[in-house]
Length: 269
Image (cartoon, rainbow, N blue to C red):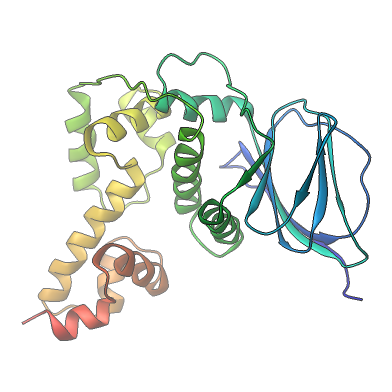
């Protein structure tokens, strides 16, 4: 039998999030959390109970647990389950929901206990693995925001504010001029004296990108200029604010659909 393990991701700069990665066939008593929680089985099968209703939890299924819902989730066999469980601060979730529906004033409970959807299962699995991997904190925050904007949109009516704010152009200019820096939402919030979720709303309404995604796009566009001017891939990564060559490679491939080396060899004349 494989040895059991438990890994927990917590980070002071992402205080709204705790992620557990574990394998176990231990049986838990019914309990509740004051967080909003989502879990999946990477391997194995469970019986998931929530509010006195029972569900089989298998691959391509997400268990959804609203705050204070009494639940349990236990393995069906002696085989060790391998699973991810993500716990999110309810106020953070409410602020993400408010980006979708401007009328929301408190967290809206999700009306289902199970989401059976292969695409969302894969996206959530990828998010969990991304959080545990050696990626930047800003990237982890951004990927979490993007996933939950998509997830909560499944259950909320879209009512966005038509936001027009002259400071949006000022923020764009600041990011354009300081693209080499790792600029967090908190830094933008303090510099422009704006709520960080208001800044996300501005970007979502104007260009449908998060501020961090916009900054990455600026960096990639700048990197193409550096490559065209004969800079090496290593120097280009450093000049454009990526913390290493791997970080540059992954983001270049995502946005340009080719690697920096392929771009340099095949497209740069």
